[in-house]
Amino acid sequence: MEKNVKNSCVYCSNIEIKKRTIIENYLAWVFPTNIPIVPGHILIAPKRCVAKYEDLTAEEKESIEELRLKIIKALKKAFKAEGFNYAWNENKIAGQSVPHFHLHVLPRKEGDEGITEYEPRKFLYRPGSREATPEKELQEISEIIKKFI
Ligand SMILES: [Zn+2]
Image (cartoon, rainbow, N blue to C red; front, top):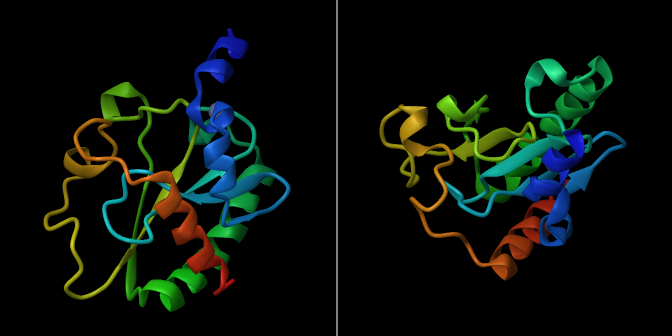
């Protein structure tokens, strides 16, 4: 059962996503999403394939938090972020399309494009509702952010 979940998980099976890695530690990594709501929209995920926050170990939660603190510093510099939206979707009903926990981090600034009203289900992760960003552009985004870490 768990093996099936792993095989169908795009984060675990798509090597392009690994190439997008901005920063990682032993238990988690950071990469740009392919359908960003704003420039610099990134995801933080545990390396172990688990679907829910409650499935994470204390060490994995710490690793995610360590990366969050590092990445927001870089996003402030790279994208002049003045604030952030944080979100994760849990279960299909809440819009979780990849069964692998991931924290969305959206750098926000005055006048940016993206969320103009706050209704997460309207914006966060409905594949097909927006065009995916080309892989090359996503890897360039990773390189830009890496310069500020
Ligand atoms: Zn996975």
